[in-house]
Amino acid sequence: MEAFFDQTVPWYLVDVPPTNSVMQKLLVEYAGIEEAKVDGHIANIRNKAWRVAPFPCVGSFLFAELVLSTFPVYPEIVSNLKSGTWSRYLEVGCGLGQDIRKLIQDGAPKTSVMGTDLLSGLLESGQELFQDTNALPLDQALFAADFLDTSDSNVLRKAGLDGTVDIIHATMFLHCFDRPTQLRACQRILALLKTQPGVMIVGKQGGVSSTAEGREHPVKGPMGQVGGVVRTNFLHNVDSFRALWDEVGAATGTRWDVQVREEEVMDRGYLYFDEEEHRWLSFVITKL
Image (cartoon, rainbow, N blue to C red; front, side, top):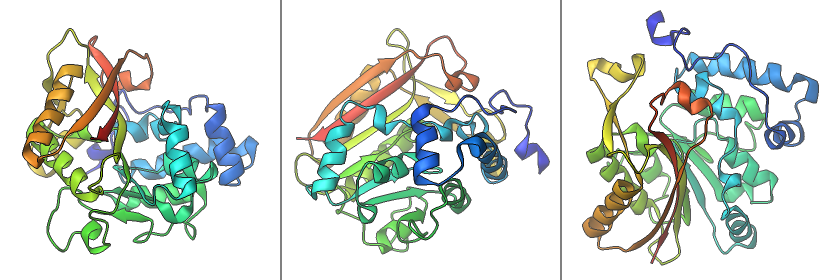
């Protein structure tokens, strides 16, 4: 069992990388962590979270970086939530939920922001990281759920979220699945969204350059064989990602404006996606 939590994998860093000033401010002002203790606090939470989920985003401290607030559309998202134009934000595969806390710090009502992840231990690690267990309780704001489960017993369905969400944030999420499962995940996203034009899906995921073909990518490390099943990720290029959403639209009778951008950024993602063709794909998808 200890092999499952192997710390010799390339994406497990011993030392905390320099914390971005925006994340530092979030931990000091929102979570109330003393500035001098931020690095130690992050390291302590990472070590606990690794025993729950030995994921690359945990081992490499990517959970201590913000994504959503770097998007050009972010001010519009905050404005819509603050004004009540949008009543519900849901982050799928939210992990420790750092972007959720940033939204709250920037003025989004706590009652409008929610997150879900497969593992309750990751959500609890986020509560400990941000010192807000009472403000964002499990089963009310944060939901441990199998996102692909469409049965009536699914936590998200029992919580009444289907058809109620204005914006879904899906960062480091879709690339966790093979191509057929990505289609299922996208259809599940649509079931959670409201039906009117203007609802939005935003996020960032691992992909490949436009000069490479979208392809299946073996899941590295012990997470690749959970339950004895060898899993793969599907890594898109820009064109294959748009083709996925064409298929989603055709399957659901909906139309989507898909804005997707390829980014070549040398960051800690390369500890896992170490191929020369690795790129990040950032996307904003709006219902027409």
